[in-house]
Image (tube, rainbow, N blue to C red; front, side, top):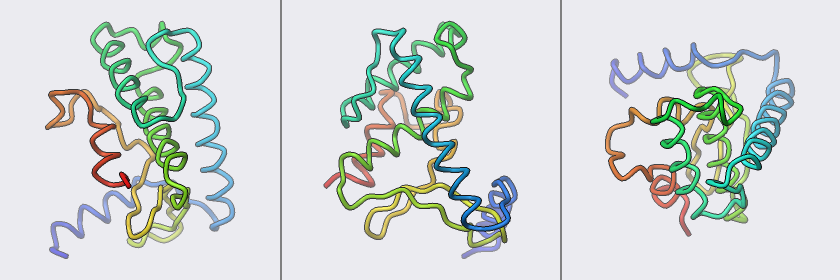
Length: 160
C-alpha cells in the first residue's frame, strides 16, 4: 500500500464511529440498518415511484426516485432530508444483496486502520463492502450518467 493510500485509509477510519467493543457496535449498526429500512418503507408508501420489494430491479427505481427528488429539491416533501435518503439507499442496497444471495450476510467489523472504530459491511465470499453512507452525494458521482449506479454496483460485486 502506498503512503498516499495509507493516509486515505487512516483518514477514513477517523470518520467512523467509535465503540467500546464489538457487541456495542453490532447493537448500534443492526438498529441503524433496521431503522433506515423501516423509514424507507414508510416514506415509500407515500410515493408511487418506488416500492421496497428488495428485487435487484428495484435498485433502478430507487435511484430514479432519488434523482427526481434531487432535481426538484423535494426530499422534505418525501419526508426525509437528502442525507438521510442517501443513507436509506445505501442500507437498502445492502439488504437487496442479502435477500438475493443466500451466502451474503451483514457483518460488523473493526476497521483495520483504527482501533475501536467499526463498519457495517455486506459480506459474500471474498468480497466485503461498507454500506454506511455508501451513496452519499450520489448525484455527484462520476460515471453515473445513466443514473443506475446502485444496479451496476450490485452486478459488479454480487451478481451470481
